[in-house]
Structure formats: structure tokens, C-alpha cells
Length: 113
Length: 114
Image (cartoon, rainbow over all chains, first blue to last red; front, side):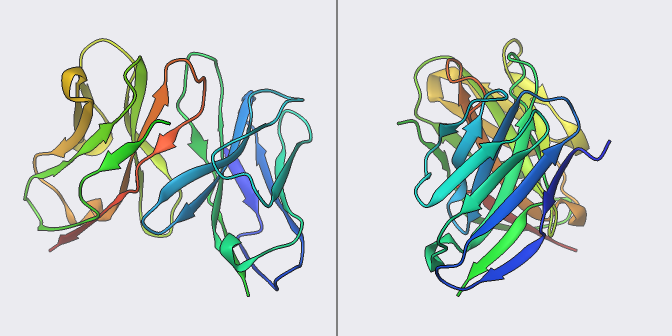
């Protein structure tokens, strides 16, 4: 089992460019999440998908869109990157309704110039 | 909105010292509680979790945490730290009726010196 995988590991963008962060899990989990991690602020939820076919906004959704492509994959898109989106992005997933333990991917370090 | 507070942002201690990291949350209802650890350059891993039952929870690598409902706290402890415990530690809370979503604290950077 690879667990939760993310691509790319690193990315540098110029202001205004767009990109998509990819996330996949092979644990047959229903729910998937995107977080951003900033120094001194912990992890903040951007978007989540409780199950295939559904997505909902988290705490900091502005400037982002998501797609739950299928049960395995959940992508995060930045349509017009801004320097404020410089961060480390983590994808996570969890399985059963009664089990809230989330499993995290290795992260994507994004710099927007 | 719920908040999660971690009292210390940075902790430096020597090997064999005891460690206690504070975590308080603001939600008054049923909660599920977690401590995650992030070793340098790695992704978050679960240390321990509390859902119900015995409020003293034991996790991996000798860590434990105590849920004190009256104090809205879930403090993490380890009696004797090792250099390999150098990491960032995050407390996280899930409201019992907000299935799946976690609210994280700001994190505590722990440095253990040899």
C-alpha cells in the first residue's frame, strides 16, 4: 500500500499562473481533504470531500477549486496563483464514518513569486 | 467556531527530560481528540487518539495523553524524551457531529538536545 500520494513534491509558480495538485489514496477511503500548512498557524482545511461525488468548503477555500475525480483521487486547483498561496499543501483521507483518523500524504511545497 | 490552542510554540529540552504539551479546545459538545507528529521533512503521523472510554490514552513511542473534559484539555506527555522525538506536534479536534473534519492547533516545535 502506498497510502496517500501527492504530486508534485515541489512547485514554483509566478503570480497569475494556474496549476493542479494531485492526490490519490489506495486505502478505499471515502473521505478526502486538502489542507494548507503555514508557520505558526497549524493546518487549515481548504476543501474536503465526504464521499465520491461531493465536495465542500473548509476554513480557507478562497482561490481554490477541487475535483473528486473518483473514489481514489482528489485534486486541488489554483486558477490564478497569488503569493499568499505560498504554503505546504497536504492531502489526507479517512475511511469509515466512525473512524476519524486521517492519513496524510507527503505534502507539496508551493512557492508563488 | 471551534478553536484549538496549543500553549507552547517552541520547546527545547535535553534527552531524558519529561515532556508535556498543552492543548485546549473550545467546543462544548462531544469531541474526538488527536495528537499528530511531523518529523523533519516528513508528513504527519498519528501519535494517539481519543474517542471515548478511558481518558488516559497511550500512543506510539511512549507517548500518552489525558483527556480532562472539565478543563477542555488533552495534554500530551512523555516521561523521558529522546533526540529522535525532535519534531512538530499538532493537537487536533473533531466535533462529534462534524464527521471527518479536523481543527488543528498551531503546533509546537520540540527540539531535544543530546
